[in-house]
Amino acid sequence: MWNRFIFRSIILLMAVSLAGGMSSCKSKKKLAREKEAAEYAARVNTAKTTLLDILNDNTAMSLDEKEAAVRSIKAMELNDPDVDELLRQAEEKLARERADWNKTAMDARQREEAALKKDATTMSLGDYFTSISSATNVSQANMLIADALKLFSSPDAPVLIIISKEAGIVDYDRPTTIKNYLNYLKDTRSNINQVEKIVYDNSGKIKELELIKMK
Image 1 (cartoon, rainbow, N blue to C red):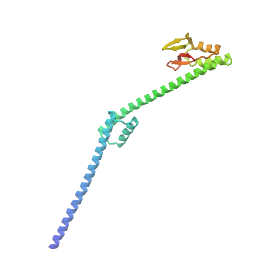
Image 2: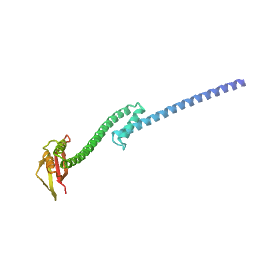
Image 3: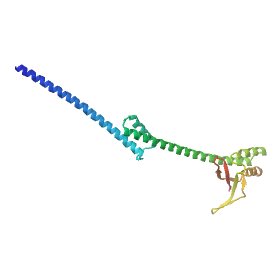
Image 4: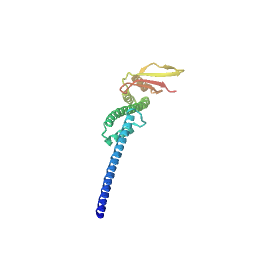
């Protein structure tokens, strides 16, 4: 009888131990699920916060950094409806910002190119004036004149020559045209004026030229 009691006690202890082990296993799985759920919720919350900051311009990130952040959140594939909607809005907003940035950059390049073109034109005009006035023969001078006229919108583009500037008062010589002025350089072989101002038309051609007598 004593042996039966011992045997039953051992069976009972084993059952209790097994039940405890199963309960412990279930607790670990529950804790793992809770931890995973908490981490997922944290990722979703961080994603929402970042996207809202981007949408509300509440961030010091550059455009490149904002685009990278959106790509990173999208790659996480959180499958959260709110995050998906915020991603859609953020992508549209950043696409507009990128288009505006590209346009601004292009406008800046065009302005820089236009400025360089103007500087180059001013330099070439000075070269033309010098070359025409010092041409060795009429034929050479006429060829240079023909080339120089290609820079202008018309052979009749007006040329104004400043003869004096004092106390804000500007005196001009008699107006002429670029064709007449270039022929004047050819005939007199005298180049005493330099470029003061150039006015361009929409196609980049010179439509008006202002010169000033060199001192």
